[in-house]
Length: 295
Image 1 (cartoon, helix red, strand yellow):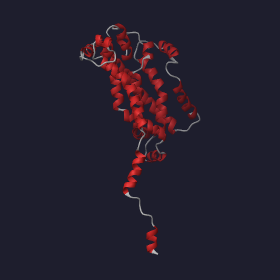
Image 2: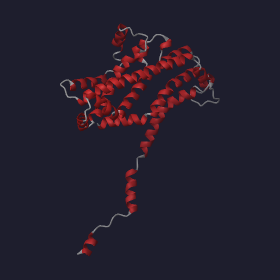
Image 3: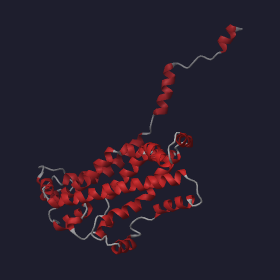
Image 4: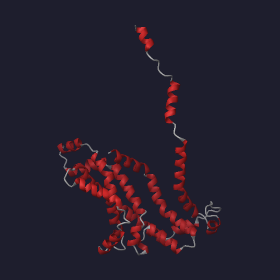
């Protein structure tokens, strides 16, 4: 009987056959790579054109707008970097971006903690209200927003840019952070309470460290959005010394409309910091959004 049992047992598949099955499962349609590279080219193409355009002369751009530099003209970038107005506008953008990020993170974490960890009658309505805020971009509310900022006496000031940016970034921040905070086990909160930790102590010692991936994600999104903001500064700022870089590009382009190469150099220098910042933290953004979806 034992011999019969041994014979009845099916022999394992040969190792090469199993490897072939794994290779078949790992194969990806080449069309996916083709489409991905096309999308990458569409995204990188305009950026490369602007950066390389700043390294060309105006005559080269006129003769061949889409060509490569025949002689590298670094003087366009040098003249922009030697301009005090460029650094002033870059400092304004940095102040707006950093202040907006700090405000969004602090207010977003506190509001998300209440919506995620406490049960009260108005909780669903408040969460739905923040979710509805995603459907109203700043462009729709620019006229009443302009009147409100004017009545508050914040015209032509960076505070008039920072406060609305924080308000309009909060819906996205809360939608991302609430799943992170809901995923924290209640047993952990009960254990902290038994150890004598207050609600604020649990918030600062446990909630904030555990929500770091989501906090980093919303902070990066808020900073990049503030750095690239154009509509709100256009309505609020009227002094060139208070301009942020997007407005500075427009002002520089109108002032040096004939000097296309310098305009392209100014444009590339104004967008390179945001691109570098976004590229460095790209994985954290994806990880934070993935965690929010799972939560």
